[in-house]
Length: 175
Image (cartoon, rainbow, N blue to C red; front, side):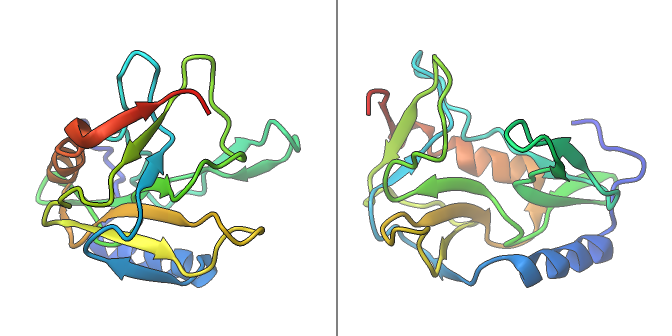
């Protein structure tokens, strides 16, 4: 992976995480799944994108156009990264891959999009921790989960742990 010259230091990444946590909902951390979970990322051809992460490498403000409102909004990131000794690291418990306990109507799929289910008995690799939002979405039943790095680790190591879950994902393309 090509690392940007202005990639954050660990200290800058920790500061950004502190700002992000100030606005994030309270989470509970789990070592094992408490329910079957659904991953929205994937395609009907069986190709999942569980290992595709939106990263934040530097502290510059990032904006994107919201197609619904027409407003510029902060760009979404999955995990905060930093550079150490020429390598890209993910900051522990700084975000991760989103999952849900049931189908999320707010998350639209493209023509070839597909949900994937992950059984609650799947062994979660050491190095991944599960963050569960303490409060459900409005309506009371839909909870957001995230597979996060349990500690600081090399970016490629975290991606490898996520890829290790691919054999356990079963497509559920018709809802």
